[in-house]
Amino acid sequence: MVTIVDYKKYQRENGEAFYTLEVQGGIELVKSKETGRNYFTTRSAKVSCTFNEMTCKALIGTQISGSIKKVEVEPYEYVDPQTAETMQLNHRYEYLSEEESIIEQHVLKKEMVY
Image (spheres, one colour):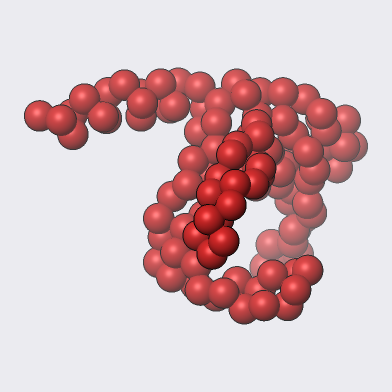
């Protein structure tokens, strides 16, 4: 399950506005690469939608079946808004519907074994 936690307004090149919903997965335990200590975090992803701002606001708190997956991408620079540190990343997070999650977990892994 993921929860809609926020939304963001964007503008297309032609001036038309559109929105994305920010979805967040459940709590995860992760081990720090630098310190070796455990900490809790959540994964989040932005998903485009066709809703207006009023609908986006109303959907905050709604839970949806699915999960958030880490996806490898071409390297890019990211500036941490809290520390202003510039980092080189090669992943992003993507929302997967419940059906896509099931296929990935059961079908794709089995195909890789053979």
